[in-house]
Image (tube, rainbow, N blue to C red; front, side, top):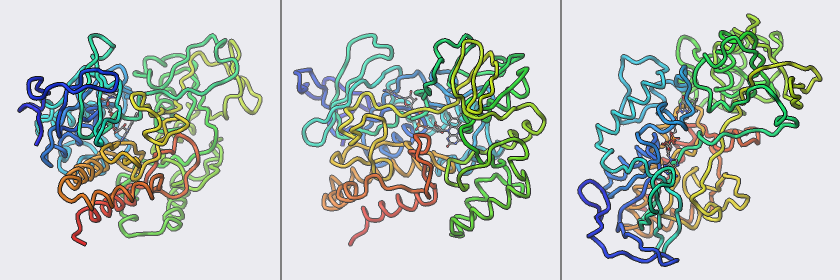
Amino acid sequence: MSTSTDHGRPDPEATPPARGGDDRPVSDRGDTVCVIGAGASGLTAIKNLREHGFGVDCYERETGVGGAWNWRHDRSPVYASTHLISSKPFTQFPDFPMPDSWPDYPHHSQLLSYFERYADHFDLRSHIWFGTEVVRVEPAEGDRWDVTTRSTGGYGPERTSRYAAVVIANGHNWSPKLPRYEGLEEFRGEIMHASSYKDPAQLRGKRVLVVGAGNTGCDIAVEAAQQASRCWHSTRRGYWYAPKYVLGRPADQVNDTLLALRVPLRVRQWLYHWTMRLTVGDLTRFGLPRPDHRVYETHPIANSQLVYYVGHGGIGPVPDVARFRPYAVELADGREIDPEVVIFATGYLPRFEFLDASVFADSAGAGRPTLWLNAFTPGHPTLAVAGLLQPDSGLFTLSHWQTVLFARLLQARRDRPERAMAFARRVRERAGERYSGPVKDSSRHWFEVGHADYLRAVQRALHDLESSK
Ligand SMILES: Cc1cc2nc3c(=O)[nH]c(=O)nc-3n(C[C@H](O)[C@H](O)[C@H](O)COP(=O)(O)OP(=O)(O)OC[C@H]3O[C@@H](n4cnc5c(N)ncnc54)[C@H](O)[C@@H]3O)c2cc1C
């Protein structure tokens, strides 16, 4: 099926070089599919494409598998204490369970060993070009793609190969999103984004301001409560700080039971409010702002310790930052504080620099593609994105089924073109569809999906692709 060698490597002897638009030599890789990135989503893409009979070349700019979970890489966003936020059974790949002996919420080092074992078990490494970054992905004739790569860091010549299809699995948790504030440049203290926070020693004995109440911001505030001489935690609005355990079970498992029983959103919200009331109680009593939204309308924050440390005086909740002064920070309520270290846990933005923004109908170039199932873009039936999701549970199962669907779509293009055309119609009609209840309109929630609704939609798409009608 593919012109790849046994190890999935391009064989320069196999095909005479084609010519790209600007007369570059292009190595034709026949039916081979290109996968960008060897994190969770890229690894499962390689596995599923191989299992469906496709040759695969994967390009990974780092030197190992695991993506965000590979703490050895500079761009990894994990810090020493990072554990899963979603629980083990709701995170793992459906065909590769994590060991029974592991805890409900494994440590990031366990996650890395999980990916290394997954890669070895399914023999994926021989299809990966490590230390190679993709710099351009351009449409070529016949729905094919010219992918240009070079050694990470820009050393050596560029090389262009032509592929039958491309899976973009480049992750969306590595490019820091930094807010703008008046006076930030003049501030004399230390400023960092959470992506540079690695170890609590960075906080020891210092006055620390943590900005942002996502899961990372809350984790860092809790660490600062134990290590720093003082910790302020600035949030723009009030949030629901859900415990990681409810009724002795990981919270996502309890939520999933309610979803499986098809308990309506309103009832789930009511039950959640009551659970919060019975366990944590009124958040405003702790000086935390009252949430301005109902639960499930923002990405859930799972942190059993934040309220505890607020209650013990270790964390001082403060409102949004108004402006920076050389030796102080002015808050939205007019108060001034004097942190030595400011950590922006303000999230990440997706980046697709190798792709012209028009391919994703992302006219603003803001990194928010218009996709169906967060994966398929109108007008480009041989391109898919994997892992561009922020689920209310674990991601890996979702990436797995996304890439199974893409592999089946590629098979249908070959064997049942009428099915593939019907699929392309649905992509055009339904791009931008959402798979969650109403959420706050902020880049933090762009890719939010309810895992049950999302998996149901993928299942329907698989059924439509394969049914005999
Ligand atoms: C602190 C933290 C906690 C988290 N907790 C959870 C959790 O509990 N559960 C959960 O499911 N998810 C969690 N996540 C989300 C996490 O991003 C996913 O688990 C997972 O890592 C996403 O996998 P991915 O393959 O899609 O992206 P990544 O893991 O980011 O992998 C992308 C890969 O693509 C490579 N790449 C990027 N651009 C290029 C290029 N141009 N050329 C070549 N290679 C490229 C990168 O080097 C990287 O290896 C957490 C994230 C963070 C930051």
